[in-house]
Figure (tube, rainbow, N blue to C red):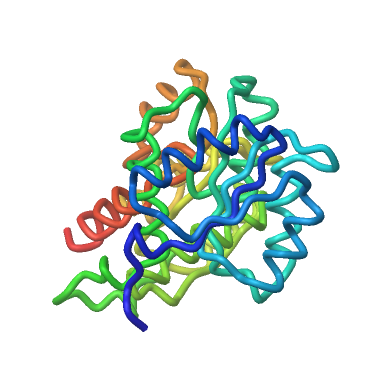
Length: 265
């Protein structure tokens, strides 16, 4: 299957405001995207998406009949839409409303107002997500690499698994929280651990501290992927010994490069 370019993207835009639809269309036109379908309601959009599977859904957070988060979760319940990319465009800044859609696996979140360049950068992330074969690292056998993914969100684990699969990593074990992860770490060896911060029973900071101070795998690279915004908490995680911290949604090309670097070393 040939890789898709930005200009070839088939896009469904779910936006209740006709004015905002026009703004988004003008920006997409300027970038060179011509296959664009508009809907105002989430349920109508979902029916269209299932019948004519696009490459990308761009949605507002607030729709007349559901939220953008609910739309994304509905998309992810359909196995035929597994490879579909989702971008949120919203003026919402409240972390309590944005965090669920990050956890649900949005590829990009674009704040309003935005420029054509801002949209183009976000679309680069989408294309990067859709074309994982571009980023397979030569001369390294990732098929034998063992990775532990720790996140209480099944959708987040699914998204991270896709990023890892794009590198050729197939030996992936999942845990729902830090406590479950410690048991797995005691019983198995991992080349890399990817963890969330906010989790029940044992959070990401406590897990990193356990790995560095108590486990037999104290030198294993640990990447944290989180929507946590508190600078003090993140500083504590860095002090605990995390190898790198990434925001949700992931900038996929950056984390691929880092994973390749960490594992190659």
